[in-house]
Amino acid sequence: MADADLATLWVYLSASPLLGLTITLIAYSLGHRLYLYANCNPLLNPVVTAIAVLIAFLQVTGVSYAAYFEGAQFVHFLLGPATVALAVPLYQQCAKIRKRLLPLAITMVVGVITGAGSSVGIAWMLGASLETQMSLAPKSVTTPVAMGISEHIGGLPSLTAVLVVATGIIGAVIGTTLFRLMRIKDEAVKGVAMGIASHGIGTARAFQVNKEMGAFSGLAMALSAFVSAVLLPWLLHMTGLL
Image 1: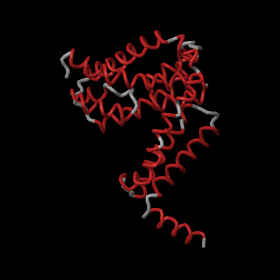
Image 2: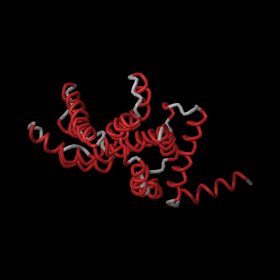
Image 3: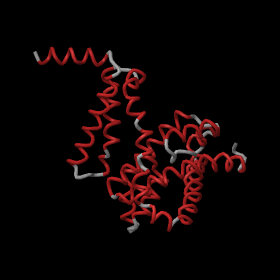
Image 4: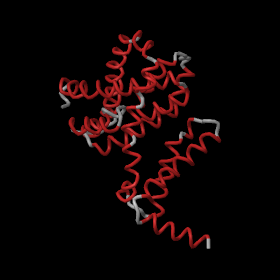
């Protein structure tokens, strides 16, 4: 009886947009449980686990990404309100932010230039094509903005999206360990570094560590997206790459 019920449920879900939403929630729930069970080990970041589970599910079942996204797009839509909600912890840190406006502004510009310049430079030295280099340039910016920048400067938006996710995951996994090894204790400094380098995924990790760190990471994520959209095309044009 149980097998028949499961088979009926699968037939219903596989023909419904609910499949994408259901499997996404299940995958993330499993990833989060595993993350807590492992004592919040950054190597078991729930986003990484959820992505691995979803890839395996789509491969095994043969469900196309388009069919999956019909339901998963609801979660995608919630990224907008979730980003706006970052204003709440930012407001709570207003006094500290006002005291550090100049260092923040300098850090944004230097961070964006260093992040994009290093990735493009390394790709160039390794013999990557110009298109790949341009796809790498906005890798540390949140996905929608990064894809727009990539398209404008001659990169591949689809490749940029993959690179952005990979960058965020790597930052979320190794960021806190690097801060500890470098003996960085200021939560604001950690947050700004995480937000510039690892955008939304890094910011989610920052909030798990500390509210102040998460607030500054959210601020850095938003400001670096703006600075990148303004500076990168201009810098690439000045260097003759665009």
